[in-house]
Amino acid sequence: MNINERLIEAAITSRTKAIVPVHYAGVSCEMDEILEIAGRHHLLVVEDAAQGVMSSWKGKALGTIGDLGCYSFHETKNYSMGEGGALIVNHPELIERAEILREKGTNRSRFLRGQVDKYTWVDVGSSYLPSELNAAYLYGQLEAAEEINADRLRSWKAYMDALRPLQDCGWIELPKVPPECRHNAHMFYVKVKDVEQRTRLIRFLKERGIGTAFHYVPLHSSPAGTVRGVFHGIDRYTTAESNRLLRLPMFYGLPENVPVMVSGLLKEFFASQTM
Image (cartoon, rainbow, N blue to C red; front, side, top):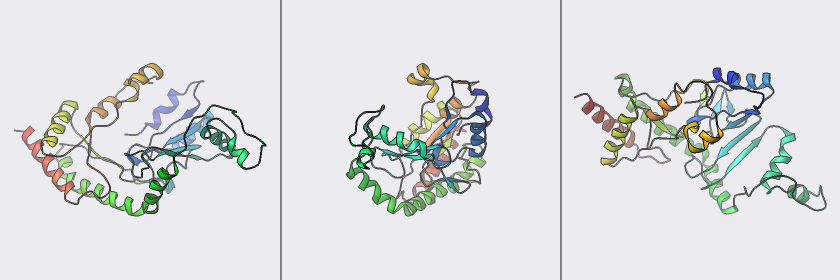
């Protein structure tokens, strides 16, 4: 579900400023090749590691590999403060501007360090600072980050073990995690035949008390994407794979019987489809 690094170079133009790899579901993109392409074209690499806290690529934490990295602590993430996130800056020359953007476009941070005698507006910016209450709520989870991560990974593995027979029968496709990636069990999804089958499966599970959801509408076909974006090349996979994907219940403290129960319901559904 990640960017195809072999197609990046053909999409680069004279206007390109950065490559933004999205580590979908906390599984890393092919960062070695992406960094090599960026180096050849003098581009920044900005990692979208919103779903990647506690994940890594060849032992390196996601978000710390490129020039900049972005984490999310939104309510849907593994570690949450309701809203908010973090920016990882790997180049000293970018730190001051990041501070200015965070400080509503002012040089207030320099003022607090005694580097200027007054502060004023020097750039664009906005109100990005979380409250101390939000930060405290998050901090408690970060103190237990390994415990939370281990719990989610147990649930993820239980799903994988329970659903593998359905993949062997050709009914579903399961997530793939390359050996060089350490993921964080941000989500567990299956892929079915097409959007029509997915719609029937969602309804089938809902009638039996299991809430499921599909995921993002492809950016290029969203209202903003049609105005501001360009899809380079042929849409062979993005829309089709998006239409097949279904997220199963996954959260910290997921009861141990849920993966087996959901697997049984999926088996029941697909058995009824073949009659």
